[in-house]
Length: 289
Length: 286
Image (tube, rainbow over all chains, first blue to last red; front, side):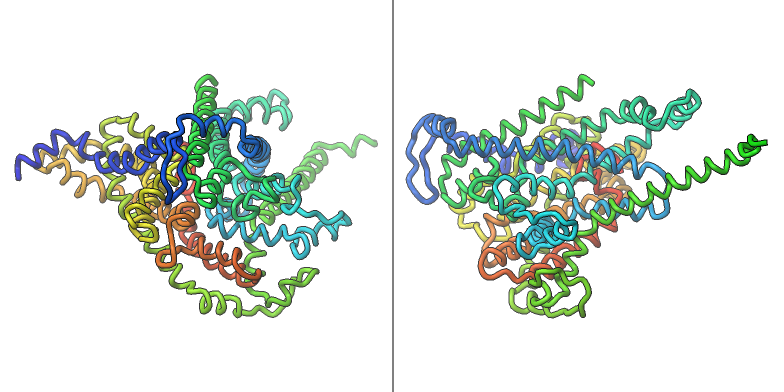
């Protein structure tokens, strides 16, 4: 008994994290390795696997639907994230002062990011509804033409970007707000004495002061936007047709609607490299600034 | 003299008026931002309290006599309480297991500076969840574990455990090492010091991390969509199915959405300072 305790004490650095490491190996590393193996097989769930070498990869490269998925993934991400950054900076600047009800305001903007995504997505779907949705009522009240929102191919992704922006701009705002509060007040004071306008001190003091926070926010959002699933699947299921079908949604359908496990694994490998590649790239940018 | 109009007192008064106007404008903008953030929630509640007739009116009905009919329908007709129970069991189990595995790991990372391990756990959080899902599905299917709490707890663990680890690393780093060493001098073992000294001192962090892990499991949709079934289906999947099969009952959807979201909002109010820390994996301190 005593020696067991001594053994644990001596090897605490290995034994304490061991259960978590085992969980990661079984639940994360093993599936990733399995995907590589599966991607070499033509295999439907419940059927016989046939070894096909790199055929799934060749097929994916010439599959128009895969390229459509890649395009939609990038379109969604590079539309949503910069927009959220702008809105997030705006909210942060607005909130970076004392005003009555500040604490309450900060709580309110937390709600979009913690509320259950399926519930959020359903409510947005109701609001987008072309015939009964409240958004078209607003448009009409303003004398604007009605819109089909997510029911129209060209508007499906922009509409989803709207939902994502509503959901996640506050997170960027709160990250930047924390950074803004650590910019020394004397810098603003000095700039004011030198006659700098509010706009000038924003550009020359605030932005440089929060640059690394901006990059952190961009990395986090870009990585999550690339793999957005819930709101897209619930609101459009990738439609109309394949107009909002991202790589994530396509891989899901391939695996769990068409049950083509081998091909789905191939697409998942693509997606994994895409997300991790962009995370590494952005992190390299971060380390240089 | 006409320059009398520009006495210092008047200039100051004019500047004050200008500032007051600017402050009013800023306050108005803040109100607009908050209104936009709240509108979908407001609409959710409104939809849940309106009758079906009012909900499908072409012109939105803003004023009406609220009815609880939608809530009664959702709860009585759709086994809603069973689904809620499933969500609760899965979230509680995965959070519990996440604590058992995550707390010692976080402690070890904090004490022994195991940055590599911290990064490995971060990568697990960055990789798209769907990557794991095809192999999991095949494995659980082969083991006959589809539609069991075990499969859902294990998979939801991947959502909660990294959160717990990352929040607790910074917490454990803040616990003075002297306290632990004092315990060693008194003859405590490493585990004894961890359980009796470190953990009690870290209770606020453990509470925050647990609630966050619980919320994230409660909100999880993708894993449950594939791995749950009639016996274990949690609320988000149940509500999603609810729109897929059958006519759209706006009021019912609203009521269901309110019922899923309410517990999350209550929990959020308790630990709001930790939400951003959790969502950013510790990149931002609360």
